[in-house]
Image (cartoon, rainbow, N blue to C red; front, side, top):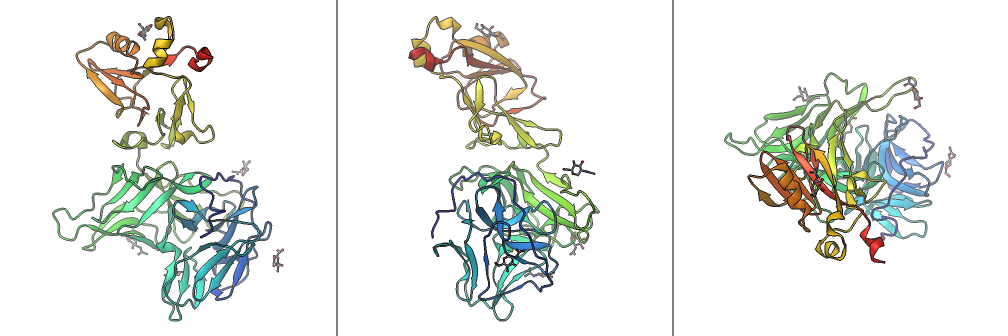
Length: 445
Ligand SMILES: *[C@@H]1O[C@H](CO)[C@@H](O)[C@H](O)[C@H]1NC(C)=O
Ligand SMILES: *[C@@H]1O[C@H](CO)[C@@H](O)[C@H](O)[C@H]1NC(C)=O
Ligand SMILES: *[C@@H]1O[C@H](CO)[C@@H](O)[C@H](O)[C@H]1NC(C)=O
Ligand SMILES: *[C@@H]1O[C@H](CO)[C@@H](O)[C@H](O)[C@H]1NC(C)=O
Ligand SMILES: *[C@@H]1O[C@H](CO)[C@@H](O)[C@H](O)[C@H]1NC(C)=O
């Protein structure tokens, strides 16, 4: 398949040019042979009967590229609830691309030169498509049986009426405006446990869960999870094999009739339930979450083989709204200044060779002191009993030591890169960070 436009790591502007949608009465049916074209200002789309959802080309601001997706068509914030993807990449089409509904191939997306960008997998002969009012786009056979549907190929969002079966998953985006697959997953595992975990991109290797319902077989027969259900009243639960329910949340009195509801695994790893009024005058926007998990991702996400919420060498902190944000310690800067979740890099070279080359030895480093900040998975040695002063000194004179943490008579010396950094006010600890006074690179030349 042509991948010229499924550009890896492409950063999209979050400013959507709003397509002019022509609302007309329709039954949501899309006949075989129908097509829509990606056009600035007048992109065609297929609307659900109520006009609530549109399927088609959503312009990605400023670069003549369009995301093949489903979005809320009646509200200013055209939040994407599904997009086409292949492996880790969103399906993005240049202006003039055409999506056709074909009886034998299903949906087929071609670029303006006629090259195939993407097609839906279908097994059987398509009679028609339906853009359903639930937000599900379905390819049906002549008996109205489903051959393919977007609800069975979810991205980061689940909608009322949608279920996720065992071994199904949601994947976060990489950032607010980058639709490539990100680091976080919501999975209903084969054993029935619903978990949130990170993966070590570019592989799918899953780290230990940072949230789990523990809906496994356990001691009661049939208690393992069968499906994650988001039902039409907006209740979100794991349906057990024996019919029991593990309720994640209700819609908290918010009417699913009067509001759009969605549960999204956000790019920062939080799985949250949101509402937006269907009818409104003046401003309306997505509510702050009606519910979310985990409550403190900086503390609960701790991986032996992963890097944490914020990437290497960074510090995860909760904002007042309990969303994580990331900071770099002094002497470190963001790897990508536009994406604070990708980690920090030291602004200096540290290592034994560098220390040897420089002189006088004593003046090489400043020591920054932080309180209650830890990188719990980066230790290489533990010294006990010790004092805070000796801890600092020991790290200072050890050319392999980047950071030392002292707490309850114990000194942990740590090496770069630092992972799973966070602030934990219960620690009552001191952290000594070695920061180079001058830039080694400048000294050498
Ligand atoms: C959009 O384009 C289609 C096909 O070119 C045309 O029929 C339609 O009138 C256009 N609509 C608007 C609002 O410009
Ligand atoms: C289509 O939407 C209706 C409600 O509008 C719902 O009852 C039905 O299950 C949906 N069908 C599919 C295939 O999603
Ligand atoms: C949704 O689930 C809740 C909790 O299990 C239940 O009380 C409610 O009746 C369900 N709603 C629908 C429409 O099935
Ligand atoms: C509506 O939105 C505009 C622009 O975002 C903002 O300036 C204004 O304060 C909002 N009004 C209300 C009532 O929220
Ligand atoms: C850490 O040790 C170094 C080297 O002896 C010293 O210069 C620095 O002041 C100490 N810092 C703290 C906070 O103890």
